[in-house]
Every structure is written in C-alpha cells, then in structure tokens.
Length: 329
Figure 1 (cartoon, rainbow, N blue to C red):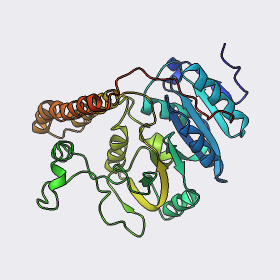
Figure 2 (figure 1 turned 135 degrees about the horizontal axis):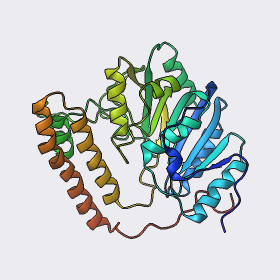
Figure 3 (figure 1 turned 30 degrees about the vertical axis):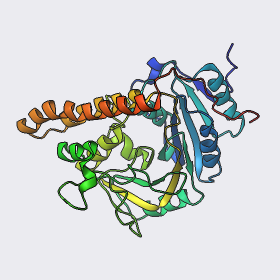
Figure 4 (figure 1 turned 60 degrees about the vertical axis):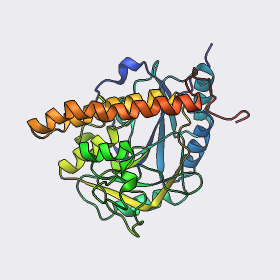
C-alpha cells in the first residue's frame, strides 16, 4: 500500500490534465518540475530550490514514478510547506505536465526547471535583474552547465530550420570553423556575452517567464511529448512580438540523463517532435513539402544515432526503480 498523501499533495489522475482556468496570480515565483524515474538527484534539485528565499512554491509533477519513488516524493512535502506534489497515473509528457503545474501555480512568475538541475545561489537574483528592464511578453533562460562547469548544448540556440537541423544532427556543424555556412544551431561555444542579450532559443530545462506570458501563448504545445516544445514556445513568443533573453550570469548545474529510460525512447520522441515542428511552422507550400520529405530524414538521423549509441552502451534494459531521495533523507 502506498503512503498516505500529506495535505499539500494533490493527487490527480492523468485524465485531469486537460484545460482548466489557471489559479489566481500572487506575488512570487512558482517553480515547476516534472519528474519521471529521475533518481536521487531530484533531492539536490529540491534543496537548491527551497534554499531560495524568493520562491513562493515548488510544484512537482510525478509523471508515473514507481511506488518507492512516489513515497519518497510525498515525503518531500514534510520538508517545506511550499512543496506541492501532483501525482499522475501515467507519463503524460513533459509539456503537458508543465502546463498542468502552471495551472496550479499562484506565483506571478514561473520558473521551469529540470528535476536533475541545481539552482546556483545567485541565480534567482540574476534572473530578476535580467527581467527588470523588460516590458511586454518575455522569457529568460540562463547558462546550463555540466557538473564540471562546461556549458551544455541547448543553453543558447539559433532558430531551428530544416537546414540548420540537417547540419547539426548530421555532425556537419563541426566543420563550421572551416565552412561558415555549415553553422550549427547550438551556440554554446560562442564567446559568452557580459550581459543579458536576445537569443532565438533557450533551454526548456531552465526557463523564467511571467505567468501572463506563458498563458498568452497557451503554454507548451501538448502535441510534443518530450523535446522540441521549448523551441516551439520560443518561436511562438518571438512571432507574437515578445523577446527571448539569455542571461549568462544566471546558472544551473544540470546533471543530465538521470531519467532511467533508454536513449532510444528519448531520441524517438525528439524525432517525432522535430517532424511536428517543421510541419507546423512551414510558411509556404515548398516548405511544407520539404518538411514532409526532409523532416523524417532528419528525425531518422536521431533514431539511427540512438540505436548506435544504445548498442554500444547497452542501455536497452528495463527501467529500474529509483528513489527520489537518497536513503535516510
């Protein structure tokens, strides 16, 4: 039998994640986290969030964890009254789960954060500083770092097009220093700016935005299950006249690949997301035709890469149950 839910744990079936009116807004920041077989690193994420004084609440969506991990998640509510747990019966996808959390959020601003990420001590202050001069609709991302301090791919990206995707996912982007037209969509190797600056795309692992902006766009497109929904949101925001900003001094340390699922699962959904994206944003009949032809080819590169990496690494076993909190916590 599963542990009884504390008062601030909201138990929801996955079917209840459909459209509802968002909660009334209040001052403060609501942090939104989705977890699926994340493992012990989630504890570091939670403690780093709760150490921030400007956080009004932390809403964690349990997207179908095993019973042991679910019980550990529910115990998180004993740590701080700001923690709220939402339990889904199945994995409903990242974007849909974030929308689910955002509907419950009461903070005027939303911070979308991966469950295997640690907020650095001055991050909230840097995000707030970057937001101060902005008006209208805006979204801010920061530096997403490996544990060794190196910037990860995805922190800073250019507009995703069929050409840039083909160059990037084929590996031809490595030739960019010699052939500038082979420009990768990933820009983490570019010189780091000394102040916040506009950027076409920032990472969905680390997004800060007013709740009014998020809902004016309708939240994440729930047609994406995993990956590409962040690229879609940034594009729709810019198309609507808003601004996407990269704040280089706002940082998280992102462990990455902590969810105990196969790389094929991840790359398959990324491939499906890319196909959806290119077809959705085709601007004319020619682009639409190319999206139907080239989109699956680009997606195929990702799936083939997943098969190769999976065969080498031997990562196609069944998921293993993982506790959300280390033993004794």
